[in-house]
Image (cartoon, rainbow, N blue to C red; front, top):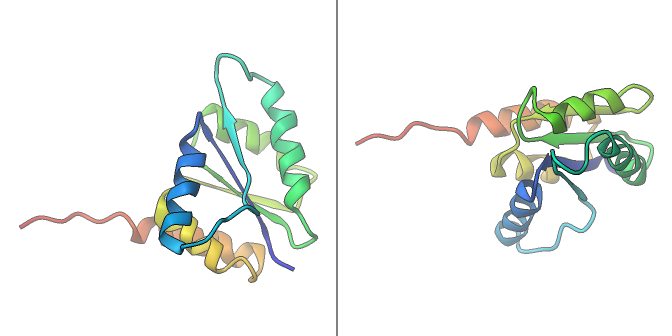
Length: 129
């Protein structure tokens, strides 16, 4: 078994990141669903979508939910759904973070949550000549 992974972002950001991760890894990542939140039309209906998706991917090892922006509607909705689920949210998703958690999904939920943060931070660098 492995930890379930869900991506919840504004619009198609999550789907785009997933597509790029598939390109880099050279394989489909069908086991990672995305929830595209639309501020105008989703509102609190987003809670039901997020809850159902977390439950869908949790095989008993828990679920890591990756969101795009702390304090935003997607992250705020996820935080409301976390109670009652063996789930952890990590905000600030980037491609490095997504690839890292995918590669470690057979580890514990708490372990890959830390890997997500480290992978996301490591992917952010300042380069100057």
